[in-house]
Image 1 (tube, rainbow, N blue to C red):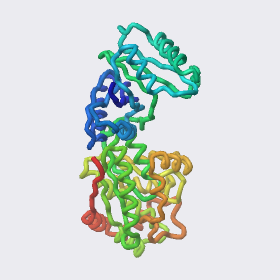
Image 2: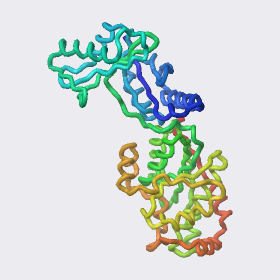
Image 3: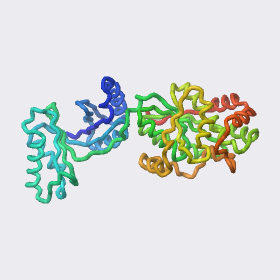
Image 4: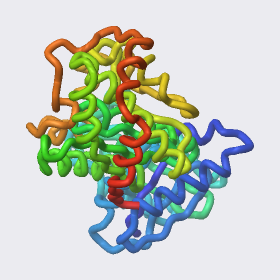
Length: 386
């Protein structure tokens, strides 16, 4: 008997002739998630088996792999010879002392003498004799005892099923530049688009000394959390202090956020061009704040020359976004009370529906290219994981 970890994938099995490519990327991401832990990964039909690890590492391995996009579920299992007595001994080791249960068998090896239904009955019957406090409940059991009889002469016995992150393997859907603020929304947007297989690089805009270094550290922690799902992440940190000062000095106050967003989009696209990205990703939700109207988004989009702008949260309300932030572990960091650049020179009445022609006229008072060049020259890049 030895302990192994079973990894099952989800959408990959739908990929037909391209399935091999997705399996290859998925395997690379599994390996990346297990850096620092001695292990081996094997790929029998329809799943991956992790073994060769030190005793006591199974739970850590399962926790890490459950966060890899493309993972449907993970189980810590005992691997034993495909012999009825060996299988039952393993089931007995993981079976509860009391409560309701059912036995669930998958028989990949069709040469095994008992079929799935016969195995369920045989193992369940012996358990009822050995542990009289147990009762069978095939519809809503408290415990499911699973037996997976493999073609290689082994059987996997387990009772846990850890839900995986789902989605597609990161690296199968291009690269995007995530506008990562310190708020609740943008980390969730990044998570959701990475779940569809996209590699992310973050761009964070700060206004030091109007904002403090704790605000930057907060965003770096959010990037670190996201990197735990994406297998690594680069964060480009850009100062927009001078840009905001110039907007405040030369343009109508109510246009501050509108004009700043346009600068952010231009800068993100230029960094993205250098990084080999194909799109910009934002955490905007329609109507959530004054700048997140159709007209505001149109104003921002107008300066993006080549990239599409993806807004995964556009139809979400705040409650839904908060629920997802809590689920992925970013919420507690996002609500730390350190302000980001959008709070600097914040107008009392920001434009809700900016007129593009008027915005462009106001922007003409600025040396846009010089301000962008200055911001890019001072940009820093920090890498998390990977």
